[in-house]
Length: 136
Image: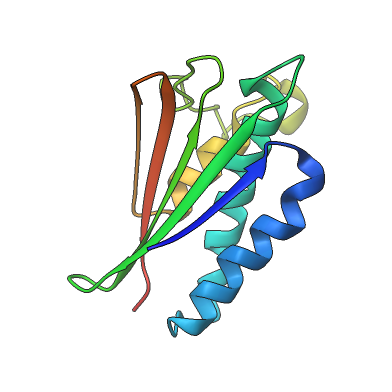
């Protein structure tokens, strides 16, 4: 397992992306899946940096684990911010034209579309969001 602890600040996004992409490449993840996984991680991290500790700042811990059956990456985000389940919000109605849609929710919707599994729990004072993607 690989772990990265960062201040939950959007300025740290390049550090997160390098962490995710470097480990995916080293694990032999197909090149077409790396941008999908990176985008999902970006969305979760930006949500944490924007809302978890507002108006102050705090840390986020990102854990990456590779499993064999099936060959997958599991990425877990943890923060001690305000309890919030982004999966509880209804998906946006993407059949509507963009100008008629409510603002917000599209990033998590896309994350749910590109990842194979995504789950949230609040435990021991932490938001814990886990997502899995097959890398075969």
